Length: 363
Image 1 (tube, one colour):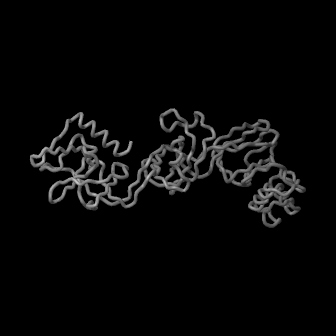
Image 2: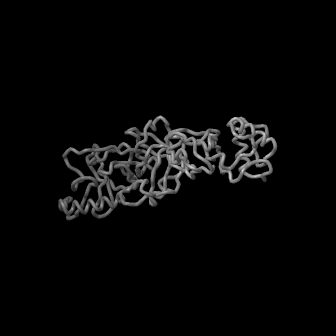
Image 3: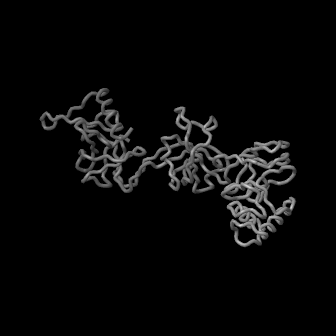
Protein backbone atom coordinates (compact mmCIF):
# COMPACT_ATOMS: atom_id res chain seq x y z
CA UNK A 1 0.00 0.00 0.00
CA UNK A 2 1.47 3.41 -1.01
CA UNK A 3 2.23 6.24 1.42
CA UNK A 4 -0.73 8.46 0.46
CA UNK A 5 -3.12 5.51 0.72
CA UNK A 6 -1.80 4.72 4.20
CA UNK A 7 -2.29 8.34 5.22
CA UNK A 8 -5.88 8.43 3.98
CA UNK A 9 -6.73 5.11 5.61
CA UNK A 10 -5.25 6.13 8.96
CA UNK A 11 -6.93 9.52 8.74
CA UNK A 12 -10.35 7.94 8.33
CA UNK A 13 -9.70 5.57 11.24
CA UNK A 14 -8.58 8.39 13.53
CA UNK A 15 -11.57 10.56 12.70
CA UNK A 16 -13.88 7.68 13.57
CA UNK A 17 -11.96 6.77 16.74
CA UNK A 18 -11.11 10.19 18.12
CA UNK A 19 -13.62 12.52 16.49
CA UNK A 20 -12.78 15.75 14.73
CA UNK A 21 -10.59 18.52 16.08
CA UNK A 22 -11.92 21.88 15.13
CA UNK A 23 -9.69 24.91 15.35
CA UNK A 24 -11.46 28.24 15.10
CA UNK A 25 -8.97 30.77 13.83
CA UNK A 26 -9.57 34.41 14.87
CA UNK A 27 -13.22 33.69 15.61
CA UNK A 28 -13.99 32.98 11.95
CA UNK A 29 -15.68 29.71 11.14
CA UNK A 30 -12.81 28.27 9.13
CA UNK A 31 -12.40 24.59 9.91
CA UNK A 32 -9.00 22.90 9.46
CA UNK A 33 -8.73 19.16 9.98
CA UNK A 34 -5.26 17.74 10.65
CA UNK A 35 -4.09 14.16 11.05
CA UNK A 36 -0.43 13.33 11.64
CA UNK A 37 0.65 10.22 9.78
CA UNK A 38 1.87 7.61 12.26
CA UNK A 39 0.33 9.34 15.32
CA UNK A 40 -2.64 8.19 17.35
CA UNK A 41 -4.69 11.34 16.85
CA UNK A 42 -4.96 14.83 15.49
CA UNK A 43 -2.21 17.36 16.21
CA UNK A 44 -2.66 21.14 16.31
CA UNK A 45 -0.21 23.23 14.29
CA UNK A 46 1.11 25.03 17.35
CA UNK A 47 1.01 24.92 21.13
CA UNK A 48 3.11 25.33 24.23
CA UNK A 49 3.54 21.60 24.90
CA UNK A 50 6.91 19.94 24.23
CA UNK A 51 7.14 18.23 20.86
CA UNK A 52 9.44 15.62 19.44
CA UNK A 53 11.24 16.97 16.41
CA UNK A 54 13.50 15.64 13.67
CA UNK A 55 15.87 17.33 11.26
CA UNK A 56 15.11 17.64 7.57
CA UNK A 57 18.04 15.97 5.85
CA UNK A 58 19.20 15.70 2.26
CA UNK A 59 20.19 12.14 1.44
CA UNK A 60 19.72 9.23 -0.92
CA UNK A 61 16.50 7.29 -0.40
CA UNK A 62 15.88 3.74 -1.59
CA UNK A 63 12.73 1.65 -1.54
CA UNK A 64 13.60 -1.99 -0.94
CA UNK A 65 11.92 -5.36 -0.89
CA UNK A 66 13.27 -8.22 1.21
CA UNK A 67 13.20 -11.87 0.16
CA UNK A 68 14.64 -14.82 2.10
CA UNK A 69 17.46 -16.72 0.45
CA UNK A 70 19.87 -19.46 1.44
CA UNK A 71 23.64 -19.58 1.59
CA UNK A 72 25.19 -22.54 -0.17
CA UNK A 73 26.88 -23.46 -3.43
CA UNK A 74 24.07 -22.66 -5.83
CA UNK A 75 21.51 -24.82 -7.65
CA UNK A 76 22.13 -28.55 -8.12
CA UNK A 77 22.49 -30.19 -11.50
CA UNK A 78 22.70 -33.83 -12.51
CA UNK A 79 25.86 -35.23 -14.05
CA UNK A 80 24.86 -38.18 -16.19
CA UNK A 81 27.19 -41.00 -17.17
CA UNK A 82 27.05 -42.88 -20.49
CA UNK A 83 29.72 -45.52 -20.05
CA UNK A 84 28.44 -49.07 -20.09
CA UNK A 85 29.87 -51.44 -17.50
CA UNK A 86 30.07 -51.85 -13.73
CA UNK A 87 30.58 -48.84 -11.48
CA UNK A 88 33.75 -49.51 -9.50
CA UNK A 89 34.52 -46.09 -8.01
CA UNK A 90 32.58 -43.02 -6.87
CA UNK A 91 33.57 -39.62 -5.44
CA UNK A 92 32.76 -38.44 -1.92
CA UNK A 93 30.20 -35.71 -1.28
CA UNK A 94 31.98 -32.37 -1.09
CA UNK A 95 34.74 -33.36 -3.52
CA UNK A 96 35.75 -30.52 -5.85
CA UNK A 97 36.41 -31.75 -9.39
CA UNK A 98 38.37 -29.73 -11.91
CA UNK A 99 39.27 -30.69 -15.47
CA UNK A 100 41.33 -33.84 -15.71
CA UNK A 101 40.03 -35.25 -12.41
CA UNK A 102 38.27 -38.61 -12.20
CA UNK A 103 34.52 -38.27 -11.66
CA UNK A 104 33.89 -42.01 -11.22
CA UNK A 105 35.18 -45.35 -12.50
CA UNK A 106 33.64 -47.99 -14.73
CA UNK A 107 35.29 -51.41 -14.94
CA UNK A 108 38.21 -49.87 -12.99
CA UNK A 109 38.80 -47.28 -15.74
CA UNK A 110 38.48 -43.54 -14.89
CA UNK A 111 35.78 -41.35 -16.39
CA UNK A 112 37.35 -37.90 -16.50
CA UNK A 113 35.97 -34.37 -16.26
CA UNK A 114 36.54 -32.00 -19.15
CA UNK A 115 35.56 -28.33 -19.12
CA UNK A 116 33.77 -26.91 -22.12
CA UNK A 117 30.58 -25.50 -23.56
CA UNK A 118 29.42 -28.61 -25.41
CA UNK A 119 29.44 -32.33 -24.49
CA UNK A 120 31.10 -34.88 -26.73
CA UNK A 121 28.41 -36.09 -29.12
CA UNK A 122 30.58 -38.69 -30.88
CA UNK A 123 33.89 -40.47 -30.49
CA UNK A 124 36.66 -38.00 -31.32
CA UNK A 125 39.62 -39.50 -33.13
CA UNK A 126 41.40 -39.82 -36.50
CA UNK A 127 39.08 -39.37 -39.46
CA UNK A 128 36.37 -37.33 -37.73
CA UNK A 129 35.07 -34.25 -39.47
CA UNK A 130 35.84 -30.82 -38.08
CA UNK A 131 33.65 -29.85 -35.15
CA UNK A 132 33.33 -27.98 -31.85
CA UNK A 133 33.80 -31.20 -29.87
CA UNK A 134 37.30 -31.50 -31.34
CA UNK A 135 38.11 -28.07 -29.94
CA UNK A 136 36.83 -29.12 -26.51
CA UNK A 137 39.18 -32.12 -26.56
CA UNK A 138 42.18 -30.05 -27.69
CA UNK A 139 41.54 -27.26 -25.19
CA UNK A 140 41.45 -29.73 -22.30
CA UNK A 141 44.48 -31.70 -23.50
CA UNK A 142 46.51 -28.52 -23.83
CA UNK A 143 45.43 -27.31 -20.36
CA UNK A 144 46.47 -30.67 -18.88
CA UNK A 145 49.91 -30.43 -20.51
CA UNK A 146 49.36 -32.67 -23.53
CA UNK A 147 49.98 -30.35 -26.50
CA UNK A 148 52.04 -30.51 -29.62
CA UNK A 149 49.18 -29.82 -32.04
CA UNK A 150 49.35 -26.02 -32.06
CA UNK A 151 46.47 -23.83 -30.94
CA UNK A 152 43.18 -25.63 -30.22
CA UNK A 153 40.88 -25.66 -33.24
CA UNK A 154 38.10 -27.76 -34.78
CA UNK A 155 40.43 -30.04 -36.79
CA UNK A 156 41.60 -33.42 -35.45
CA UNK A 157 45.13 -34.16 -36.72
CA UNK A 158 47.73 -36.84 -36.18
CA UNK A 159 49.36 -34.47 -33.68
CA UNK A 160 46.05 -34.40 -31.80
CA UNK A 161 45.94 -38.21 -31.79
CA UNK A 162 49.48 -38.32 -30.39
CA UNK A 163 48.45 -35.99 -27.56
CA UNK A 164 45.41 -38.18 -26.85
CA UNK A 165 47.60 -41.29 -26.60
CA UNK A 166 49.93 -39.57 -24.12
CA UNK A 167 46.93 -38.53 -22.02
CA UNK A 168 45.48 -42.05 -22.13
CA UNK A 169 48.84 -43.49 -21.03
CA UNK A 170 48.87 -41.17 -18.00
CA UNK A 171 45.49 -42.59 -16.99
CA UNK A 172 46.44 -46.22 -17.55
CA UNK A 173 43.97 -46.54 -20.42
CA UNK A 174 44.41 -48.24 -23.74
CA UNK A 175 46.39 -45.86 -25.97
CA UNK A 176 43.96 -45.76 -28.87
CA UNK A 177 44.23 -42.08 -29.81
CA UNK A 178 40.43 -41.86 -29.70
CA UNK A 179 38.45 -40.06 -26.99
CA UNK A 180 35.20 -41.97 -26.59
CA UNK A 181 32.14 -39.81 -26.01
CA UNK A 182 31.42 -41.79 -22.82
CA UNK A 183 35.01 -41.57 -21.56
CA UNK A 184 34.67 -37.96 -20.37
CA UNK A 185 31.97 -35.80 -18.79
CA UNK A 186 31.87 -32.13 -19.77
CA UNK A 187 30.79 -29.26 -17.49
CA UNK A 188 31.07 -25.50 -17.83
CA UNK A 189 33.69 -25.28 -15.07
CA UNK A 190 34.95 -26.94 -11.89
CA UNK A 191 32.19 -28.55 -9.84
CA UNK A 192 31.50 -29.62 -6.28
CA UNK A 193 29.84 -32.99 -5.68
CA UNK A 194 26.67 -32.31 -3.67
CA UNK A 195 25.19 -35.83 -3.79
CA UNK A 196 26.13 -39.26 -5.12
CA UNK A 197 23.23 -40.86 -6.97
CA UNK A 198 24.90 -44.00 -8.34
CA UNK A 199 25.94 -47.08 -6.36
CA UNK A 200 29.00 -49.28 -6.56
CA UNK A 201 28.20 -52.30 -8.68
CA UNK A 202 25.51 -50.52 -10.67
CA UNK A 203 25.43 -51.17 -14.39
CA UNK A 204 25.85 -48.05 -16.53
CA UNK A 205 23.80 -45.61 -14.42
CA UNK A 206 22.31 -42.60 -16.21
CA UNK A 207 22.76 -40.41 -13.12
CA UNK A 208 26.11 -40.54 -11.34
CA UNK A 209 26.30 -37.46 -9.11
CA UNK A 210 24.59 -34.17 -8.45
CA UNK A 211 26.84 -31.14 -8.49
CA UNK A 212 26.94 -27.42 -7.79
CA UNK A 213 29.41 -24.63 -8.37
CA UNK A 214 32.45 -24.32 -6.13
CA UNK A 215 31.87 -20.79 -4.81
CA UNK A 216 29.65 -19.84 -1.89
CA UNK A 217 26.58 -18.02 -3.21
CA UNK A 218 23.11 -17.04 -2.06
CA UNK A 219 20.19 -18.58 -3.92
CA UNK A 220 16.90 -16.66 -3.79
CA UNK A 221 13.63 -18.33 -4.89
CA UNK A 222 11.37 -15.84 -6.66
CA UNK A 223 7.72 -16.12 -7.55
CA UNK A 224 6.46 -14.89 -10.91
CA UNK A 225 5.57 -11.43 -9.61
CA UNK A 226 9.04 -11.08 -8.04
CA UNK A 227 11.00 -11.82 -11.20
CA UNK A 228 11.80 -8.17 -11.94
CA UNK A 229 13.35 -7.66 -8.49
CA UNK A 230 16.59 -9.35 -9.53
CA UNK A 231 18.61 -8.04 -12.45
CA UNK A 232 22.02 -9.57 -13.28
CA UNK A 233 24.83 -7.21 -12.38
CA UNK A 234 22.84 -5.18 -9.85
CA UNK A 235 23.87 -4.74 -6.22
CA UNK A 236 21.79 -6.07 -3.31
CA UNK A 237 22.08 -5.83 0.47
CA UNK A 238 22.56 -9.06 2.45
CA UNK A 239 22.04 -9.86 6.11
CA UNK A 240 23.96 -13.00 7.08
CA UNK A 241 23.91 -14.04 10.75
CA UNK A 242 23.03 -10.47 11.79
CA UNK A 243 25.92 -9.10 9.73
CA UNK A 244 25.24 -6.71 6.86
CA UNK A 245 27.15 -6.90 3.61
CA UNK A 246 26.56 -6.47 -0.10
CA UNK A 247 26.37 -8.80 -3.05
CA UNK A 248 25.90 -8.87 -6.81
CA UNK A 249 23.17 -10.67 -8.72
CA UNK A 250 25.00 -13.19 -10.90
CA UNK A 251 22.11 -14.83 -12.73
CA UNK A 252 18.35 -15.39 -12.75
CA UNK A 253 17.05 -18.64 -14.20
CA UNK A 254 13.74 -20.51 -14.33
CA UNK A 255 13.28 -23.19 -11.69
CA UNK A 256 13.68 -26.51 -13.47
CA UNK A 257 12.01 -28.57 -10.77
CA UNK A 258 9.42 -26.69 -8.72
CA UNK A 259 8.47 -29.69 -6.59
CA UNK A 260 8.20 -29.85 -2.82
CA UNK A 261 11.96 -29.58 -2.34
CA UNK A 262 11.76 -25.90 -3.29
CA UNK A 263 10.27 -23.78 -0.50
CA UNK A 264 7.34 -21.42 -0.86
CA UNK A 265 8.76 -17.94 -0.26
CA UNK A 266 5.56 -16.09 0.42
CA UNK A 267 3.34 -18.35 2.50
CA UNK A 268 0.77 -18.21 -0.29
CA UNK A 269 1.11 -21.79 -1.50
CA UNK A 270 2.76 -20.59 -4.71
CA UNK A 271 5.97 -22.30 -5.71
CA UNK A 272 8.89 -20.17 -6.96
CA UNK A 273 9.25 -19.86 -10.71
CA UNK A 274 12.76 -18.40 -10.79
CA UNK A 275 16.00 -18.75 -8.86
CA UNK A 276 18.35 -15.79 -8.47
CA UNK A 277 22.01 -16.42 -7.65
CA UNK A 278 23.82 -13.73 -5.67
CA UNK A 279 27.57 -13.62 -5.06
CA UNK A 280 28.64 -11.91 -1.78
CA UNK A 281 31.15 -9.15 -2.46
CA UNK A 282 33.12 -10.31 0.59
CA UNK A 283 33.64 -14.10 0.44
CA UNK A 284 34.56 -14.14 4.14
CA UNK A 285 31.04 -12.91 4.98
CA UNK A 286 29.56 -16.15 3.65
CA UNK A 287 30.65 -18.13 6.69
CA UNK A 288 31.42 -21.87 6.80
CA UNK A 289 27.87 -23.19 7.12
CA UNK A 290 24.79 -22.88 4.94
CA UNK A 291 21.91 -20.89 6.38
CA UNK A 292 19.16 -18.38 5.71
CA UNK A 293 20.00 -14.94 4.36
CA UNK A 294 17.87 -11.82 4.01
CA UNK A 295 18.27 -10.29 0.56
CA UNK A 296 17.12 -6.72 -0.01
CA UNK A 297 16.47 -5.71 -3.60
CA UNK A 298 16.19 -2.01 -4.45
CA UNK A 299 12.94 -1.36 -6.32
CA UNK A 300 13.19 2.45 -6.53
CA UNK A 301 15.69 5.09 -5.48
CA UNK A 302 16.08 8.86 -5.36
CA UNK A 303 19.50 10.51 -4.90
CA UNK A 304 19.96 13.69 -2.89
CA UNK A 305 16.37 14.38 -1.81
CA UNK A 306 14.95 16.06 1.30
CA UNK A 307 13.75 13.42 3.75
CA UNK A 308 11.73 13.45 6.99
CA UNK A 309 10.32 10.64 9.16
CA UNK A 310 6.92 9.39 7.96
CA UNK A 311 5.55 10.47 11.35
CA UNK A 312 6.23 14.11 10.41
CA UNK A 313 3.86 14.01 7.46
CA UNK A 314 0.47 15.64 8.12
CA UNK A 315 -2.57 14.77 5.99
CA UNK A 316 -4.87 17.76 5.47
CA UNK A 317 -8.62 17.20 5.37
CA UNK A 318 -9.01 19.51 2.40
CA UNK A 319 -6.41 17.43 0.55
CA UNK A 320 -2.66 17.38 0.31
CA UNK A 321 0.06 17.10 2.92
CA UNK A 322 2.16 19.31 5.15
CA UNK A 323 4.93 19.20 7.71
CA UNK A 324 4.95 21.19 10.92
CA UNK A 325 8.03 23.38 11.11
CA UNK A 326 9.41 23.98 14.61
CA UNK A 327 11.75 27.00 14.76
CA UNK A 328 12.46 30.05 16.92
CA UNK A 329 9.31 31.68 15.65
CA UNK A 330 7.09 28.84 16.86
CA UNK A 331 5.35 26.05 14.99
CA UNK A 332 3.80 26.50 11.57
CA UNK A 333 2.49 24.29 8.82
CA UNK A 334 4.26 24.09 5.48
CA UNK A 335 2.57 22.38 2.55
CA UNK A 336 4.78 19.73 0.97
CA UNK A 337 4.62 17.26 -1.86
CA UNK A 338 5.48 13.69 -0.69
CA UNK A 339 7.51 11.42 -2.93
CA UNK A 340 9.20 8.11 -2.28
CA UNK A 341 8.39 6.22 0.95
CA UNK A 342 11.10 3.89 2.29
CA UNK A 343 12.18 2.48 5.64
CA UNK A 344 10.02 4.77 7.75
CA UNK A 345 11.08 7.91 5.89
CA UNK A 346 9.50 9.93 3.12
CA UNK A 347 10.80 12.27 0.45
CA UNK A 348 9.22 15.73 0.70
CA UNK A 349 9.58 18.87 -1.39
CA UNK A 350 8.45 22.47 -1.05
CA UNK A 351 9.87 25.79 -2.30
CA UNK A 352 10.78 27.00 1.19
CA UNK A 353 11.85 23.68 2.70
CA UNK A 354 15.55 23.41 3.49
CA UNK A 355 17.88 20.82 4.95
CA UNK A 356 18.57 21.55 8.62
CA UNK A 357 15.03 22.69 9.45
CA UNK A 358 13.29 20.81 12.23
CA UNK A 359 9.84 19.29 11.92
CA UNK A 360 7.47 17.94 14.54
CA UNK A 361 7.19 14.17 14.34
CA UNK A 362 5.81 11.17 16.17
CA UNK A 363 8.84 9.00 15.49
